Amino acid sequence: MRAVKYAMFSTHIMEIEFCPVLDDKYKTIKIILKKSMFLCTEICIFWTDMNKIKKIVLLFGLIFIIHEIAIISDGLIDDNNLKADVAVIFGSKVNTDGSLSARLKARLDRGIKLYADSIVNELYVSGGLGKEGFYEGTVMKDYLIANNIPENSIKVDNQGINTRNTALNFKKDYPSASKAIVVSQFFHVNRCKLAFRQVGIKKVKGVHCNYYEFRDIYATFREFFGFYKYVIYYS
Image (cartoon, rainbow, N blue to C red; front, side, top):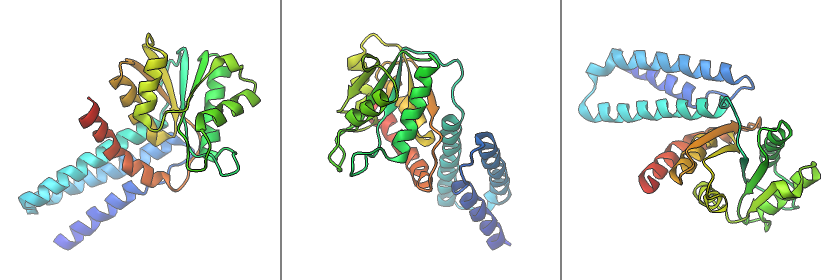
């Protein structure tokens, strides 16, 4: 009987972790929440059968799952009442031929829409020097200009080698800014907001780009540890 309980428990953990990211973000969240409810029910059923170490491990796993749900929900459900002077678009891979990777293009297209809808007045493109030999910020700027964004509405940060550096550089370039909109993949939005609040940007809104790939499963898993690294080291 105990073996059956553990098998059911393990199955629901795997279902939550590898739940597909669907185009319908609300359907995705509904699936995750439903599976989480099953998981919590199973925890209650065999909690008394567990020793202290197993309970600690289980509690950590439960915290992990709850935070993963928060990461996915925060990323997939864009904030309301979007309005800021600047949208920050986080860099990503530039291909070896200098073209944009699909995920970077999706981020930029989302930023272009924010600008076209008059939600922001400027676009802040931030990235580092990729192993392919291109400065992400410069390549991003070229794409924006090619898509009719005025050059004087674009600010480039080529030292944004990670999320923390992008936040610090934004604060340096906009010392009086109190709000911003961050643009990235859904799994990254939650930590982007944290990083910006940690440097003094109090009102941070987030939007995600509509691009999904299989590696998002790993990236979402990794964000849990990245978030708490920021909490421990930078708070």
